[in-house]
Amino acid sequence: MSKLAEVRPGHWIAGVLLAVTVIVPLLVPTYAKEEPSLWGFPFFYWYQLMWVFLAAITVSIAFKLVIREERIRRAAQGLSDPDKKEGPAA
Image (cartoon, rainbow, N blue to C red):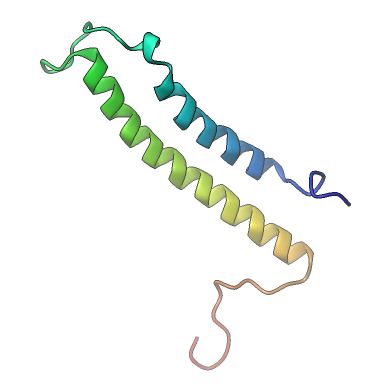
């Protein structure tokens, strides 16, 4: 099976989420304006600040998707989950 065929939907979704958080802030003409203002801040500033928080949320969602897909892949191959502790110290 090729590597491309092994890519699961969670990986694609994570990639799209990360691409959106990179590409949208680069589209400066879409937000290069002063109105509407929010609490006295021009649109240009609060829109960029909003994307800081959205990017943090998006990255955490993408991380959780990739980790979930990795656990599914490891379980399908019969491998142990590296996050689960085994032995007497568990």
